[in-house]
Image 1 (cartoon, rainbow, N blue to C red):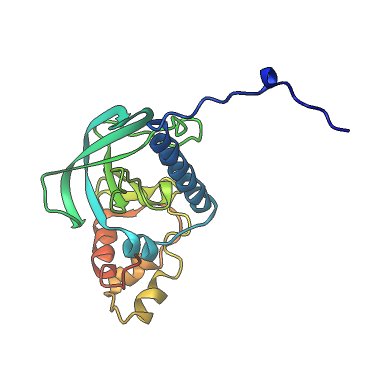
Image 2 (cartoon, rainbow, N blue to C red):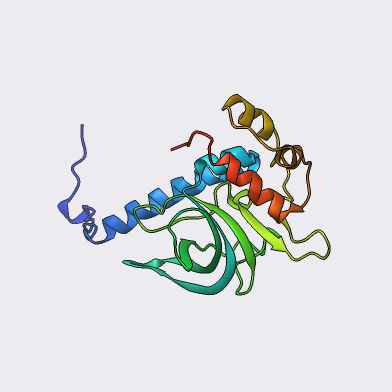
Length: 214
């Protein structure tokens, strides 16, 4: 025996409009991207990795923060941040530099700082994706705040308090045949906590000789 289903009970499914497909694909890509980023939230990356991985290493003041939708995808919120460039350690020579990242509004909930005009930052960034999106490598590990200091000068620290930042940095340099000065070696042997900005930048300059990670 078998039961015949009356045609009147058939389920009719509407076809998905073609224009929705690209947006769905983009959301999938972004979701996967954040899954990868989540790994960096529990995996410490050191300064050698940041330097080898970054396509842009830029220091400057935030002069503009714009919350807007991703061009062509009105349902995807982003934040575009513009820096007045003080020091472009790697990247395009320009008076300003703008990057755009996905905005989820989670920073304040995580105790992290959002982007604000006037912030003094040093950032390690990858090349923007095909959608024009970029964000600091290693999430907050590649985003450094510069604090003014009296006497010895300004200091710099990422949002992890430089935790694990200098682990094996001296060894990586030696292995690659990069010779550090005595002062750079001392900086590379630092523990957690802020370090002097000038010494930090000097060390970065030497580490840019390390083989790149693509």
